[in-house]
Length: 317
Image (cartoon, rainbow, N blue to C red; front, side):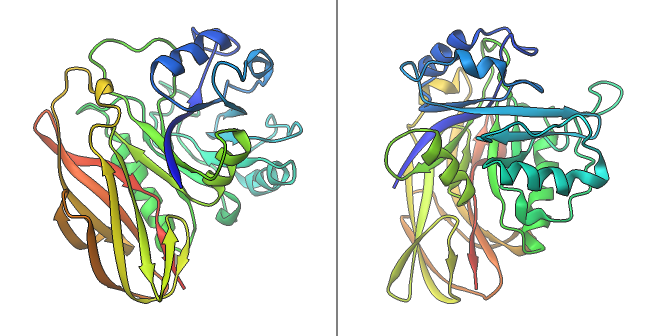
């Protein structure tokens, strides 16, 4: 088990970004990332210029339509996005899965028409079991970015309906970042070598964490067995063991004051079942059947209280 920071939403001059593919990879190295996914709008062409010797990468694409943007990672053959409409999206997603790809909802509450036509998610997904993840945090952290709260609420609602969906952060990286702008990352739990194959496996298994910076995760010990984020766990007494490095990616905090305060265990409906100090390493609770549980690290950015890291859930039988 090795959680490493990645960026799964990037653009280059092959769509509307300012980076060449090589410059993007070098910027990712400078940013301390372990892997990127190149997801240019409606084209794979930039992925042919990526160099594994600079940083590992996933070949991806951002389906950019009038009804929402969808991140497609790792597909081994082309699936036509041009005729995707709200009522055939399940068919399209099934075709992506058949091509060996995974699917993520990009920025579901990005400002839509007329400012950014198509940025808001309006597809009528029925088979959510074919969707792997949802971008619950997007772009920079500031008081005016309210889409994250709504995207997290959407994700919570889908979890309540029994969907197994991982969370991701999307920097939506187009160009060198402005000074004094705070961005986060997605942490992936790699089993083995850091490469596209293991990154895709981690996302598909739900082993993801979104974070302002801290590396924050947990394992669960129940009925004599250890479980990881994304696993399905039997109900009953369970011990949550928290692992945190609050200095991880500290250099990315720019001039922001970031204070980590408490850990919350959250379940269906967003209910908090336990809240403890950030320095507490374990908590034992009774977990109910047919529920989900995630951990949230709370604190302040420049005095404003908010979640600073959120794990994907475990699920109960």
